[in-house]
Amino acid sequence: MAHIFSSQHILHKHFHLEPSRKEQSLWAFFLAFCMLGTIGLALSFEHIGGYLPCDLCLIERFPYYGAIPFLILAGFGAWFFRMSFWVQLLFLCVFILMTISFVLAVYHAGIEYGFWPAPSSCGLSAMRRITDVNQLFNRLNNIHPPSCSEAPMRFLFLSFAGWNVVASLFYALISFTVASKGLFSSYKKL
Image (cartoon, rainbow, N blue to C red; front, side):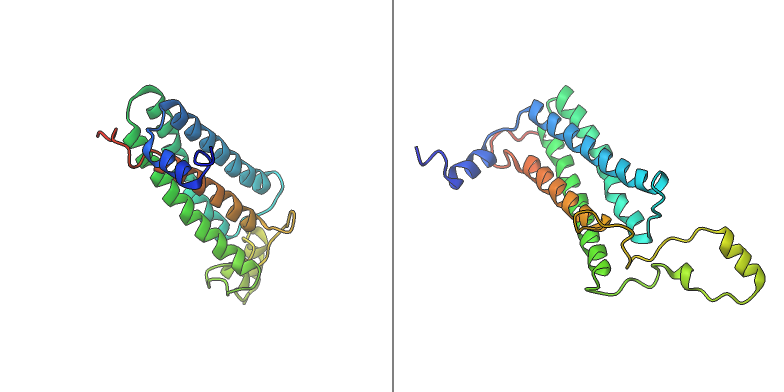
């Protein structure tokens, strides 16, 4: 009985059993829904809450924009067709994108906590010197993004970048788990 619950047995089962189409499809749609919620929350804070994103915040959204279509394609591919290998390849792409998102979020959170300096392009427009009245009026009429080193808000001690670290890690782990299921099974057919 102890053999059934051992980590070696669980890993062997994970890597050697063929993933089901339904399971792959449900995970794909679940992750797509969660990522859409994450992006929707970020856009809500921006457009409804008035929190302007900094340059790094905008860059951190790109992996989500890339991963969501992959997940929708994987969900429908697994649901309607027998193409587990290609679905797992799409999940691997999502894993890579979410790992990139995780690294970007850690970098951004490190800037906010003062572990390393912000890039020179971050908040550059806010630091330019005004030399005449026309520049002053133009500057007052333009909206400038905030500095990457200042978190506009913290919730449960984490900034938006800190929460992106948590979310990206969660999404990366799930996508890797789905991508690696049945990796060593004998069903692999292109």
